[in-house]
Image (cartoon, one colour):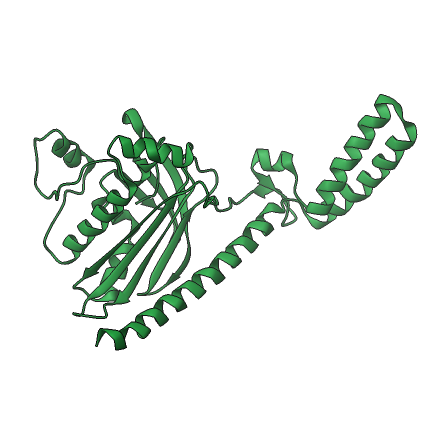
Length: 299
């Protein structure tokens, strides 16, 4: 029976993978487009002026000529790429023909430096219900104990605040870059992000016993890379353990077995031992703390 069900499960995951890959390709295309921050007329003027200064500088020679040639080369680069580093530093753009605040691109995670974690739970609730629960990012701190809050800014953009080392906090913005209702959600931090991170959650009909198989995959690139992860593990802070515990709490809440505290004040009281209601064990840094400076992956 389970062998017959497996092809369906595999087909769903393959479909999810194909859709996510397509969304990542589209996201990469948007990032390339976002790199262009000057208008077409401005690009043309930069290219023409750059060519003039480069030729004039080479002919003039000397230090003055060298400076003019360098200026010409920069203007040529500006015209050819459509990217102005000065605009980038100021956070502005003229790409649409007028001066405006530039939009931020996704903060890419380097796989070779990222800390990864994956957890799976079978939850006896319908896919649609679990999808709606997770899709409300403001509720993620209920499952990820070191995540202090997630402020939903728009339907696809949110602001995350998590506990950092020595009582500090680490913050970043994230955006949903791909989703299919009742099937999966993928989100990623946006620039600037001290700890680039991304996460995905899948909802698949369980092959055996009914219910829904929920699969969570998180990746974060802490400042110290995998060295930071080793330090965190030595301190008893395993990203894998944190993600596993977070998904287990999600299961308990979804199935009605647990009602954890939702306020940071109550959670602080629990850590001091003054209140223990609604905990399942499992201390340690939430995923964001998983890698040194610690904010890993978010609520």
